[in-house]
Amino acid sequence: MSANDGLTAAGAASEQTPLLASTGSFDFGKKVSSVGGNGTGTGRTVLDPNSDALTTREKVYLILEGRYGKVGQIYEGVTIFLIIASIAAFVIGSLFDTDYNGDAPYVDMCGKVCDAIFFGNDPDNGLGFLGIGPFATSIVEVVTIAVFTIDYILRLWTCDLESPRYAGFVGRLRYLPSFYSVVDLSSTVPFYVDALSPNISLEATQFLRMFRFFRMLRVEGRYTEALTLFDDVFREQKHVLGTAGFIGCTTWVAVASLYYIAERRNTDMIYCPDPASDCEEGIDDMSGVDTGLCVIDSWGLVDCTDAGCPPSEYKENPCYNVFNSIVSASYFALLNLFGEFPLIDQHSTAGKVVGTVTAVVAVAVFALPTGLIGNGIENIISRRREENRALEQSNGTGDAENGEAPDEWIDVDASEYPADDSTFGGRLYNFLEARTSSMAVVFDWFINALIIGVILSFAVDTLFQENDNAMYRLVIDNFEFAVACIFTVEYVLRLVASDQNPLYRGLGGKFHYLVSFDSLVDLAAFLPYWIQVWITGTLIPHNANAIG
Image 1 (tube, rainbow, N blue to C red):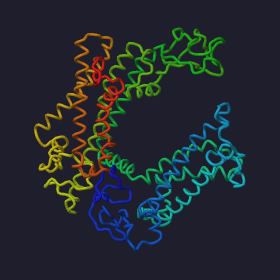
Image 2: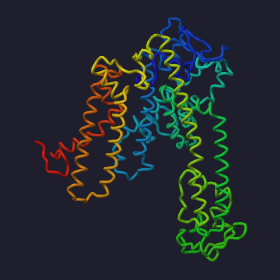
Image 3: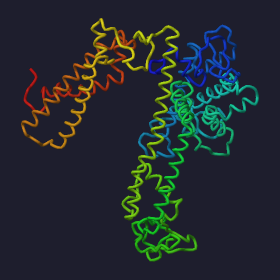
Image 4: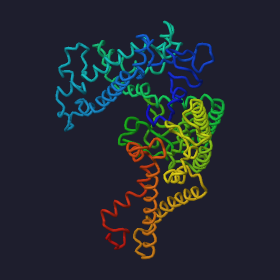
């Protein structure tokens, strides 16, 4: 388990899905049924990969899930490699496809051997002896399909170990339409259809290879955890989200109705889909149609005879108003609610009023579900943290009350685990990270004020780039120099104090800190300034104070 997973080692069983339990404490044995359930035997199965009592089928299941020691890790790595390799070959191979890029200069760069190994564009690339149909294939594709086919068969064989609901013949049938099963089938079945149907060309189905990316959700547990987090939020907030959805739909229909009333007689909203075929000779596109000459009747039907697009036996209404019905208006109403106004320059005065009201209302309407989902995520994360903290304390691996942070506690607030104040590094960490004193809070506000000041000074300076006023340049340049110095010293102090965090101890920990997101953001705040100083040899830009 990597540090980026944001989980504790002891709390992993309470967060990883779909195979591990979501709640509850238990002892790992060979197998634990109904973990996190209600004791009815309907929960998920947990297998201990270190147990000596595992059957062959259970070992296969653990290998497929990447949880059976080195073998499982190797298989997981091979699976990820094949997914990326096959998709990369499919994407890059489109550059060498003569059917679409026949005149491209790089088409001939990949010969038959290259095509046979990677891309499979040429039916004569030498793989015809495989007898898999008249269409081209590649070694990468054949190997990938073979591995994924065996993988799917084995998963179908062991799927009841993932959930008891997949046990037996009926359970296997229930497994077939599950999400991961559909992803697996979508990325392999088209190959066999192509190979076994020599008279049917299904080359367009090759895009389904992109579904293989979804297979990485299976082997990368952190993505599944993120998806199940949203699933938990939607489940917990379903009633409130349902109400918000009803309000959103009502608003959508109301806006569409207002647009229909305001724009159904607006000739600027008239559109002719195919003027070159439906209109008089010489009118090739909409620029040749004077919609101001069109007539709109009381039913909203458009007659553009005077504009050169009369009705014909082939097309009774060659032109129409895009707001001729509430259904038609609903498309543009939805775009407006999302903040897009593609027809803003064609709206009438009444339409612009509706658009203005829509823009204001949309902020409130779409803020409702956004706030609900955000609040739901925050609540679930807080609850999981409390559960992990309780589990850490019960296992004796951490004591929040005594200020001792567990070694593998990743995603926590530094203020909850202050360092030892008896050492310089500890005091520095508490001042910069944990902010355990009022002076530390003031310093944090001071740094934030400097950040805002730098942003404002940069914005103002773009307005007066040609200003040669000596005092103006002196203030701006010296402020930038002072901020760069402060940020540099702050970064060095944070680097010194970083080993107070168990994640960043030792030489490897320092490197881990240097490449962390917070560290890179801090570097970006001052490093470009010193690079400019080094390149120009000038300590303060726009002044003649050379270094040395």
